[in-house]
Length: 306
Image (cartoon, rainbow, N blue to C red; front, side, top):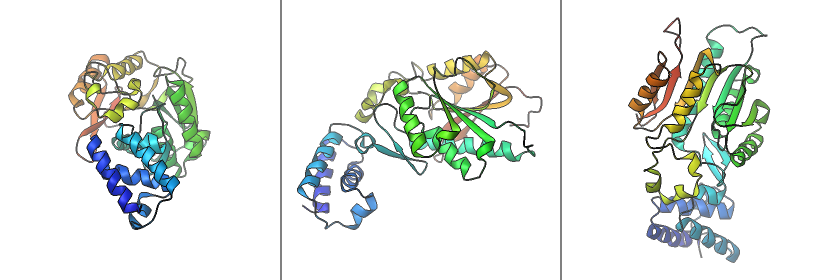
């Protein structure tokens, strides 16, 4: 069969299974089987598949028709222009999370360029809480390295799941970022902190418990621990805010960047006001204009400093 023929048949099969992106799924999976990208698949509609390739493709389409995410079948997911290894050990990186990386990178560069730095100034300490696959931490390191500031920052990644932490390590090695990352298995913040962090990033679970069962079937293949944010979606985030209230984790001029759901702007503001009175909270929006990253900072003598 030709490429176009198998794509047509696979698309019909995936449409019948309820896939919301049947044609795209079919193209990505065929590229995976053929060892080429999607563009090459589309460029050669008359190409022929071997029997072995056709059998492998049929098996992968069957897995997708059963609901398994394309990213898990392929074993990779593109995030911030980088290819990350993914599997059931961790949540699949979402496009909306790229906004968290953008905001974090801009804040690090602002801090590095806002005032002259001496050679003996300590590096900016960054924590990625609940790192999962390591996508946020690794992407941030790759972005900052493009600015040639390797020695000006360090990243500390925590994760409660040892399996997810191992996946994060694999991705860090794959992108030559392991030398800038320190991994610790911990529930949110580590049990000990050598020095306060200048920047804390977190993409913690924020989906309401009653919404989780209604998500697309592909989400059922992902760790529920990484999705379920409790009755209002902020249970885990509140625990982090409570840890911050204890003091010692964030520098006096530090900042916390939290990914939130598009409907949680008012709720995160209320949670900060309740748990961290006097702290500021403002929200960055994504390209669709939706609330995406909450920026939280302790009281400062100069309100203009952010």
